[in-house]
Image (cartoon, rainbow, N blue to C red; front, side, top):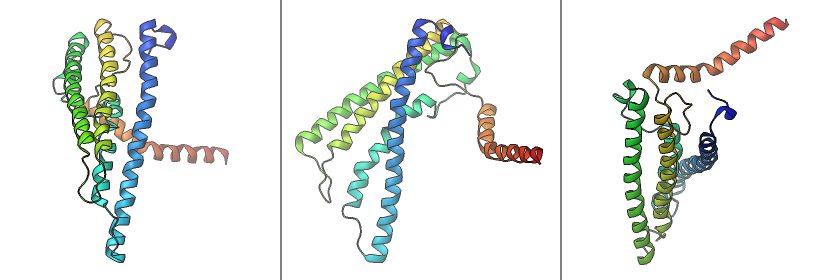
Length: 217
């Protein structure tokens, strides 16, 4: 892997933008994780209060309807950065070099177009809900904040896709260059090995610690 000093000015800029934007995605992913934890706690509280005290949370369904858009959408760009979305790699996994990167560029352009259309109509949907004062059925919470999150999350994803697009264009021009800002295609064996390594990491640390103690004794 090339060191930062070995990269061209354009590659260093792409790497800086990728790393800086990834920090934003990490924050959004953390928010989504906190919201999931909060929903779990609220759901547990709802069950106990309903069964034991006959005092359910007022507007529980309405609150869940509003909150679920947070964890459903705001972390989508983070997942795209890590290549965590389901990808059809039966063909792509067999390709290499410029052919692979050309298809990745084509796929990324298609994704940008589709997500842009979704973001546009998502924003239109938000405006309609805001103008008519749309609300939930039970406690009449305004629904426009949750609907605004959808085009916001898609806008973040579009930025990530453009970073990914420039990364694939760079690899198309220089197939042997260090991948920057693009998800890495892994074979089934590599994925399995990473899962094994992650699962055994704790055991390896225990073995190393035990070995050091035996050497000290």
